[in-house]
Image 1: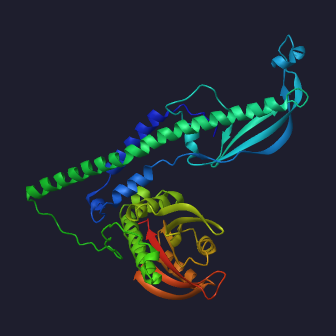
Image 2 (image 1 turned 135 degrees about the vertical axis):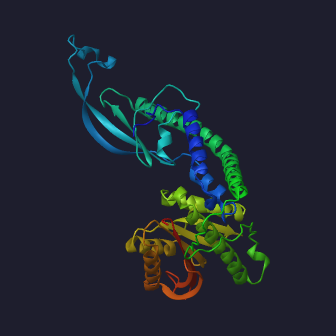
Image 3 (image 1 turned 30 degrees about the horizontal axis):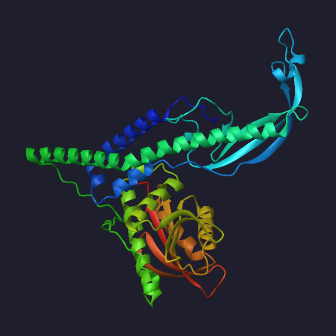
Length: 404
């Protein structure tokens, strides 16, 4: 994708996005609203929330010599030809890479505030790449550095303007979702009341949804200071159970409205869990946090102590599943003893995925025993520490079916 190439402006994009939010909510059925407490608000808001763009540190990678036409370059007037034929001279090309986090699409959309200056370049999924050409025998180092700084300055300005637009949309989004949900719910209830008042009997069809567990009522959970008690393990287990129940509740609600989130990737599904847990645990949750050897998807800290660490994956077979377990265990420090592994399955045969996942867990080199079955798709296991066989780690496996 070309950098800053789209003809779409952010104002039009936001209006289109709002229309999509309302259209998706208007597609919800009466069944979608049942037993989902306030999870629909979290699910829809998380799905449409736009991540801000965060720029990293630029670096130079490629370097090569190229032939460039100088026939129209004012610095080389002596080489201009009357008939317009090209004249080539050897130049040096360097490629400047600027890593970023966020949605690459927004590096092409025009923000509400903008300037006409453009930077030619390409955008990958995680990097902005723009070329710098110079002639070693003509150009000065200061001029080359100024050209790079001007390009970076424009990119930073564009990003800041875009982030301001993104923040504006994200701030308005919860109210938009709540209003649209209320309108849709009221419409469904009015329709049902009219049907009921007609008094026309209909044939009852009994349907049993196998494996359905009613979600628990959402509650706000206070992470008490572990330093206030002499028995940290009891309090840790209580918090761990609360987190487990919260994830189970949200996951079950996700299954019930899977048509909304079925196409989301791992990061987007993780973000839904993040928003939901943060609403219950008063902002104590962080996402993509560094812990020991890498980044962990979800981390809850209290009193300078990790009380919970989690990895979230989409089921992609045995090898990918095992890699996720290793990633989770590798990210645990010696003091970390409570973790979870959340798996979203989009496969047709969920029972097969469930049985495979349990078997793979039990065949893992660090597996010790099964502690308890919270429900058929939520099982807690006892693992030994990755680097200390005497250390015990509780790992809760959550599996959710997004393909009913």
